[in-house]
Amino acid sequence: MRQAGRHLPEYREILATRTFLEVCSTPELAAEVTLQPVRRYRVDAAILFADILLILDAMGAGLTFAKGVGPRIARPVRRRQDLENLQQPDVEATLGYVFDALREVARGLKTEGLHDTTLVGFAGTPWTVAAYLVEGGTSKYHDNLLGWSYRDPAGLRELLDRLADVTIEYLLGQIDAGAQALQLFDSWGALLDEERWQQVARPSVERILDALGDKVPTLFYIRHGAHLLNTLKQLPVNALSVDWRQPLSAVRKVVGDKPLQGNLDPGALLSTPEEVRSRVKTLLQEGQGGAHIVNLGHGVLPMTPVENASAFVRAVAELGQPFPGDD
Ligand code: CP3
Image (cartoon, rainbow, N blue to C red; front, side, top):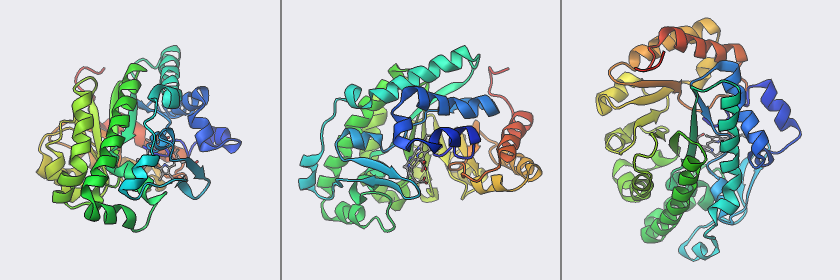
């Protein structure tokens, strides 16, 4: 999840003298910060250090991350005519650094004896990436995006399809480079009601999932999406990943035994190790009724004490059940 490393001193040290994008685009550094939490906590998976917005830079929209401000898109795309300004990138040439980082992580996991760690790649859904591209960064009202979606649905559809096509190449490249599972982040899908999610967001998601087939297991993350679960349970993904706003038992009522990932409130890690352990116990109970990949419901907050993050991982290892086949 986003910001996994920001609470770690070893991460802050690397970022102290470099920008976020510099680290993303330097494979040795991206690999190093990907490996840091795995080394420290022995979690079951490594999530690649990258960002869902990197493809926008590759498409010529111009991406920067100002400290404390978040992402900025230099050339937003707000209407059909703006689509001309978007490039059809050579994915290998423009995003090859991400593939190199994955190869470097795979190598690192091997040499450090972390053979059982699953390497997870990711991308944003077209709708969620568009939420930043159309607005020019993080937005309060998403007025440009929502306005476009009502005014000219066909034009927006063209944008989402173009984002989907780049995303497909990008994800297939990640698989080639060693990603063993892929997560799609739909952090802004819940701006849409169920019917509009189906009409506006779904086609580009399905285009991606169709292209991936069953090459690797896929996970689909939705934030704030209780009203979308009925639709999302039908997606051909291996697991649904949800935020903390609904207990997993309530999610299960809608999605049945579909494998779930989540969903401890990242804020719970601001408490004490004892409290974290007790929350994990509840979380494990809530998740019963199908496979459960224990995780937070969103990114680790930067001010999270290391000992609480550690207590989370320890509690899951002690109280949870291993997947069949694990020892
Ligand atoms: O946590 C990790 O290091 C894993 C890699 C990862 C990042 N972003 C690195 C990152 C992943 C999986 C993401 C996904 C991502 N990026 C999402 C989807 C998940 C979610 O959080 O909903 C989204 C919406 C983004 C876009 C994004 N990236 C925003 C809006 C911001 C800035 C706002 C903020 O809260 O910091 C980022 C920055 C970002 N991406 C950081 C990291 C480590 C922080 C960089 C910094 O502050 O130096």
